[in-house]
Image 1 (cartoon, rainbow, N blue to C red):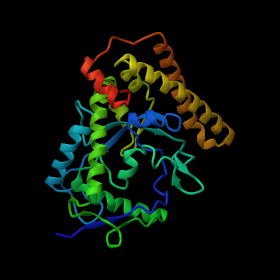
Image 2 (image 1 turned 60 degrees about the vertical axis):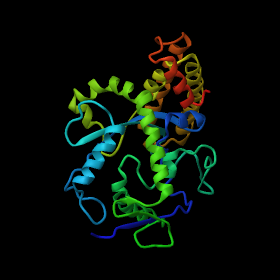
Image 3 (image 1 turned 135 degrees about the vertical axis):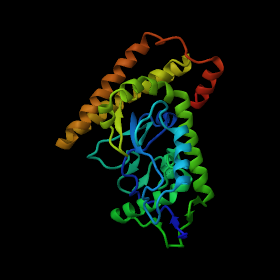
Image 4 (image 1 turned 120 degrees about the vertical axis):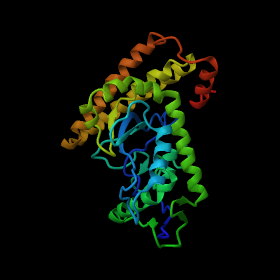
Length: 316
């Protein structure tokens, strides 16, 4: 067996901060005045035995089993067909013409929120929590090529001055294992608290119409309004209802300001993203009006569950 090893050490160059982060709902709430929240669906090709992986080997039955086990806890439930799984998650929205994270300081290339609840996914990079530990070496092999392309020097199969992160199929860095576990725990909580309920709203539409599935780019994402997630959480309790209304109010102001900045740029490449953002603005305004009239429905959870969700949202 080839002794595949990958070394990684962050140099704080900011080159990987080239898009808004995949932030959890609590992280989006914390940074409500900085990140525009949205909902995304990603179509992910399953790892199967015999697939050629980045690096020096092909996937085997153990890799396929590891993918399947992790997918069962993270990805959409229901009748998934073909060669893909579907991943429902929240993230920050950004214009494609502005290829950097809204939290990145342009002059210094440093993160403005590094010490202020920076999204966990940012610390996990360049690893990928939606892939099992056994395949993190393949992730680093792929991202080594990307890093070379942008001129970063943080991933190497030979540079032993960097910390060793993976060896063969094992993540050997305790820090990396801890961050992967934390990010996966966040994703599992998201699915439990709002993901399965929101998935049921989309499920019949998606899986009954194959043409809709083709709209989701492979290993990309279909970007949607976050309003279904917010509506689900607003039903939990009076506290969550008030918190979601506060979030929507701040988001409306942020979206309006972001739209004004885009119009001032007069960049034709912004048109599609501007249309998407206007749709987000209208959806937020509509939900805010509905919530102003009171709860949408009676609480769908028990008192104990409501308290747990309030704690998750940092309301207690």
